[in-house]
Length: 194
Image (cartoon, rainbow, N blue to C red):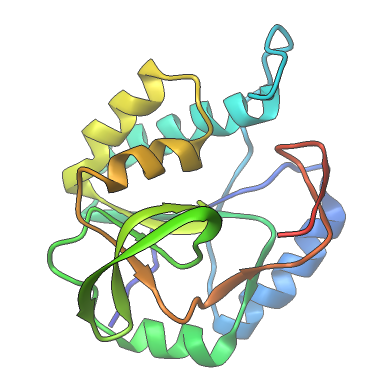
């Protein structure tokens, strides 16, 4: 069975509506994540790579640092806008994680998604994919993931996209986590249709 005891939810305290919606979703599946306030934004960052994206990047580095310090075998990182399909999530939680994973994504979006030929139950090999709405990171990739994030000012989903091509990544199919359409993106500062 999948153990999600070490799940970290990145959530800004001022986003009350998101938290209200999320609590309903968390109750559906019985998940109690550790809530992490994102690190402060750097107002000097402008452009397509937003200051909010940079805050998420640095917050993710901090979460990984703590996982390394606590000697955790794997962690899950989630955003506060997850919507869970209870039936699929229950099936996922009853499964066994692949032994050979670096990343496992519970949701994959984007026009660049590509799946390999390997399958293990509901886990499909992920060659390329974007979406870090809810994903699991194995200890064997902690240092490498941290290095990529520390040395590249890129969104976290671009960092994992880069690493998928050189690691063993899986996507859960069908996805137990979905985006709520037409929701305000706190990273992009606009409504995103997904």
